[in-house]
Image 1 (tube, one colour):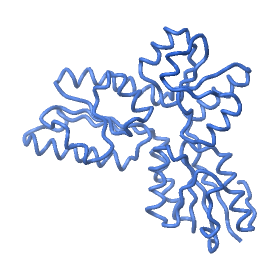
Image 2 (cartoon, one colour; image 1 turned 90 degrees about the horizontal axis):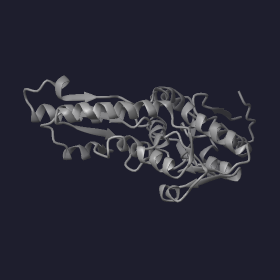
Image 3 (cartoon, helix red, strand yellow; image 1 turned 90 degrees about the vertical axis):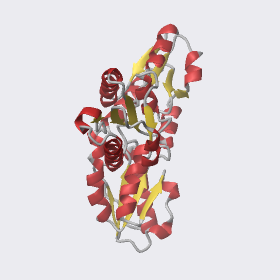
Image 4 (cartoon, rainbow, N blue to C red; image 1 turned 45 degrees about the vertical axis):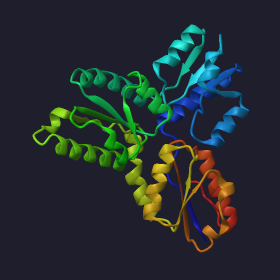
Length: 301
């Protein structure tokens, strides 16, 4: 008998859930609704909403639309998107996550401060990610976006630096970037007061960062862990690495069809978790597939 459990702390964060609820409310009215980019980094959920009528567009398509409704997803958008909507008489259904909107304002205010001191902004995030594009867009794309410690070599450490993070990045990754910048400033300015020349803002969403310690415990409680996430999800990649580091029998899958029966042949327990962009219905499909393979019942808790 295999114990099959879905991680109670997994699934949508409130920002993604809010965006999907807004989309479904509009679609239920029977009107045409466009979405600027995939509403969530999960192809299964994108397909489900497409079947209900949600039409995904890019910025080029947005510039050619007029007199319609367009949903802004949880990642937020740069100011140019709002200008285009105003010019084209587009009604925006703004589902930007409140955490992201607050961060956008913080970035704008901090940029004014650090620029007055002759310094520069750094954003720890995934280049090309919608949220990062929105954040950098608040300051005319004048921030340096870094994804790794190696990229920090390009910064000028003789000037003040202000650091922010994409809300869905790894806390450990942010701390590594932070400590590296501190050391490089100390090396470049031996008599510098770090508090005066370096402002590190841990802007990772707490609903995301709290998942790491929760997942650390979950991953060690099961023989096998199936981590369900879209391959585009930055948060999914970060959280899966937590599982894999603690449990070598952790497997990254997008849906139930990717499960290999041999993964669970000798397992007595299978834990199923997912990213903040993974719907609960998809994890339940995975649980039912494990049940079919193992011949053990899945009891929803």
